[in-house]
Structures are given as C-alpha cells and as structure tokens.
Amino acid sequence: MALRHVVLTVLARGGLSGYEITKNFEAVYSHFWRASHQQVYRELARLHEAGRVTAKVVTQKGRPNKNVYTLTKQGLDELREWVSASTEFPKPQNDLLVKLLALGIANPQEFRVEFDRVAKDAEEWLVKLRGLQRDCLRTRKSWSEHDEVLYLALRRGLLVGEAQARWLSEVDVYLRKRKITA
Amino acid sequence: MALRHVVLTVLARGGLSGYEITKNFEAVYSHFWRASHQQVYRELARLHEAGRVTAKVVTQKGRPNKNVYTLTKQGLDELREWVSASTEFPKPQNDLLVKLLALGIANPQEFRVEFDRVAKDAEEWLVKLRGLQRDCLRTRKSWSEHDEVLYLALRRGLLVGEAQARWLSEVDVYLRKRKITA
DNA sequence: TGCGGATATGCAACTAATTGCATAGTACCC
DNA sequence: GGGTACTATGCAATTAGTTGCATATCCGCA
Image (tube, rainbow over all chains, first blue to last red; front, side):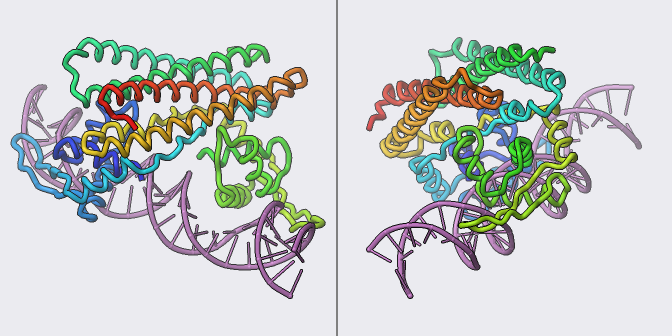
C-alpha cells in the first residue's frame, strides 16, 4: 500500500487539495512517483473514510472551490509507523529483457527499431535529469532538508538511469554481434 | 499486460506445465521476473481461453498428472507482435525515497535500523548476482543464444543493483550528516 | 455569446497483482 | 499408519492501478 503513504507524506508538509497533490506529483515527484488524479482522489477519499485526514472546503476567487485535506493525529501515527516498518524489495521486472528472450521467434529488424527508440528515450531522460541536477546545485547553499531529500531523489534517478543506459549499450553490442542493425 | 507475454515467451521454447513455468521463474528468471503459481495458472487459463495455447494432459508415474501447454500459431503471432510493439517506460517508484521525505516527522533511529537492513539486503543481492556471474562465465564457450540473453539479464541485475548500492551509500552519507546513526 | 483551456472533482468499469485457502497424488521416513 | 515434503492445480477475496467518461467553475478571447 504505497500510494496511501505517499499521499500521507506530502500532506505531512501541510494541507493540500487533491488537485495540488496531483500537480505536485507531476512537477516535483514525477521522476520517482507517478499517480493519476483519479488515483489521488480515490486515495484521499479512503484516507478520509479512515480518519487519517480531515477535509475542509476552501472557497476561492477566480477558480472553483477546493477540498483541502489535513493530516490527523491518526494519519501522522500511521505514517510514522510505516516509515519504520520493513521496506519491500523493488521488483526486477523488465519488459525489454523478455523481448530479448523472445527474439528468436520475432522479427529482429522490427525489434531493432523499437530498441533504438527505447535507447533514445533513456538518453533523453538522462539529459533531462542532468539538467535538473545543474539547476539544483546552483542553489545548494540555501537548501532545506526537504530540498536535500529531493536532491537524493534526483541522484537515484541519475544512478539508476545511467545503469540502464550502460546496460542498453551492452545489449547493443550483443545485437550487433548478431547482425541485428537498424 | 506483461505476464501474458512472459508466459508466451517461455512457452515459445517448448511445451511446459504451469508448475514447470513457475519453477522456471523461481530458478532461472527470479532476478528479472517474479510471479506466483496462482498468477501463472490464471494466465494459462486465459491464454487457453483465447486460443493462444493448447493444453494436453500428460500422465506421469510417481507424481500427479500435469497439463502441458503449447503455443498455437495465434500465440506465436501475438508474441511476435508484442516484441515489435512499443515498450513501456519503467516506473521510477521507490518506497525508501518516500520514507526519506517523511523522515522529518518519523523516528530517525527506527528508520536507521530499517535503512541498514535494506542496505544489507542490497549487498547480499549483489553478492549473489556476482556469484551467478562467475558460474556463468566459466561456461562461456558453450553458450547458446538463450544463454547469452540470460547473461544479459544478469548484467542488468548487476548494473542496476550496483547503482542502487551506490545510491544507498549516498543516502548513508546524508543520514550521518544529520547524525542519524544506528 | 460561445469556445477553448486551466482548475477542480469524481464515478464506473476493467485489468492486474496479492493473499489465503483448498485439494490431491506420491514418496519417504519412523 | 501417521507425519512431512514435494509435485500439481486452482478458486475466491482483496487490493492496486488504469482508462474512459462526466461534471462544474472561471477566465480570456473573438
């Protein structure tokens, strides 16, 4: 039950509406957590039902009203408990690898096109993260603790992304050896 | 719909029973795909329903009978199509990172214990993969194409695992800086 | 006044994954 | 004969995630 705790975590920094949480996910957390607005609203409804958050309608000018959710003591307790609880081992699932295993019966040329697209995406992802890192480091002096952790999130994206890119280049060597070229 | 294609892929190498597929997952594929026997049996039932596989009861001596599933032309076509189709970008979700974000309101000592456990698991995982790599490389001369791809699977596990370990050591530095020690 | 776009929320249906449980044959040991 | 373990299959309930659709407010623009 991960999304539940992610939502509790973002609410721990202050009350937010479902919409604001979703926008936060897209803007700040997108390189380590993704969730659709439907998921967020449903999760908020559940948390409210379970007494982990309180809801308050805030009237706005110039835009529709919003429901601002705030952690209750129970919500805070549940989050605290979760942080200390055991963490699941991340799933090693990878689609591209399965495709490599099925390559024997597939059309290698067509696969090569798809492989190149994946490799290009991986490179672009890395370029994007490196850009973010540069922007981040410029303000290093004035980081809050939250900024520090966001930087660690970025580091994780970079390290894992670089590993993936290196792996893709090893796969490329293998494909060339098998004369599977674009 | 990934498991479906994983099952098709393993069946492409020859007919197998649900039990054999499950055992295969545990023994050979466990470091890049995991699925419970319940998942496998259900997926086989769906594939059978959809005409992607045929089933044949094989009577055995000394053990219960089994259902051996074999790919049909339709199954082979679906697999071929999937291999060339576009691949989803892997999810960057990570629990430990969320826990770091929630650290401000949690018990740092308790988190440290859990963090150390995760780091230890990551190290053990790497040791296991390095052992597998050594065993693998010993027989390099006589590798089939399938063995080559299994080696690529191992390489992926190693590269990603090493990235994760490096990230954990960066997190460790951060935790020490904040005087969060075991 | 009507249209597109951002803000804001949510239901319903579907698909996928997890967990717990149930069954049954055989082998081997004590 | 009873207990344990391995082979072999599967249902049912729950939880999680995805996709499509629906609704409503407000702004700016033509």
